[in-house]
Picture 1 (spheres, rainbow, N blue to C red):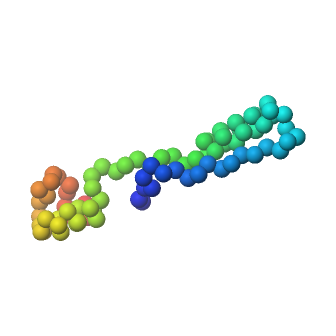
Picture 2 (cartoon, rainbow, N blue to C red):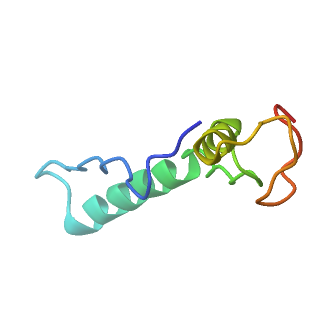
Picture 3 (cartoon, helix red, strand yellow):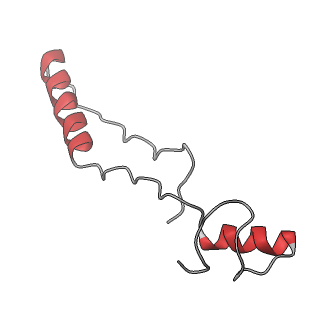
Length: 80
């Protein structure tokens, strides 16, 4: 799955009604922040090696046969 660069989704705006004291509002905001952090999906790790699409593009651009050996290093055979 492609990544979205370094962009992150916008953070939700947290508002507390006027009836809460400043300490209560801070406690509510901290609890919501912690909940958002705890339930966020884990970051995906980058896979090693190039994608098959990148590899095909490199071979096509260089005029090489994709089933042959790689002049750029050992990526394995096509689809591997």
